[in-house]
Length: 301
Image 1: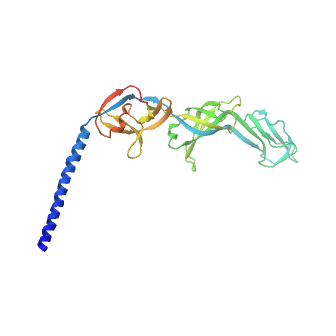
Image 2: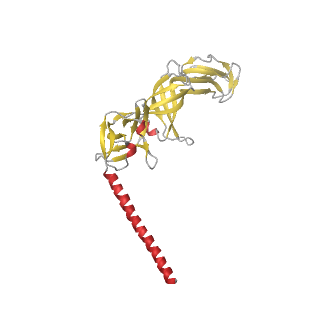
Image 3: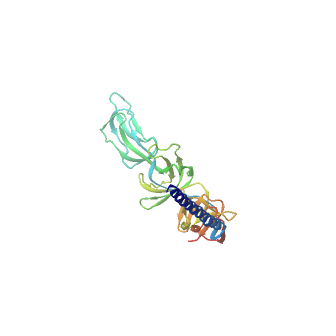
């Protein structure tokens, strides 16, 4: 019985061995030729032969208006107010008298004067009031130029430079233009953003201080291509990009950055200056595959 059991076990083992060998052969014959035939088969794709153009994308940020100069005019000595020759809303020149003080025992009356030319936004005292050291006599504002203040993210700040053109839409709907006059070197420790100031002419005082605005700053010029958003895809790492055909007609994936979304398509960067962009058939090809190409001169919708 033991001999018979041994024969039986050996027979079963042999059968499994044969099955494994046959299945391995079948898999090898089934898979490898298929892979080779897939690589040898030339899929047909349509490509856009695209040339890069120099483009300056606009960086968008929420912000607000802020007067270039806005100060509280304070007393440098305590005393009683005996003269206020101005009123709220008046324009004063630098050095004009705003408040005059009386101090017992002194023959000369201390004067509080305008530190710069501007408009009196508020007058904080009346004649007869006692003004302590550091007390506010009035607030003075110079609204020309007016500033636009934007907080720019750290990933975009490198695109902003002094003198860059900008435009902004105020909450009222009015559009204004200006140029970047200041770019912070240090980021805000809480928001990790950089303060950017934009100078806007405001001689007529029509732009008010503290108004919300949507700000667009013209970034540095970069080579860009115009594509249809329909051809965007993600690679295995989740990066956004498109598929190209190189000089050997092999498929490549290129990561891109969207610069601007327009009615004509997407302006993107990250591609060579000259590129064969796959516009049709990209979903049926893979990295490194050799393909047949048909060229088109306009982006596919």
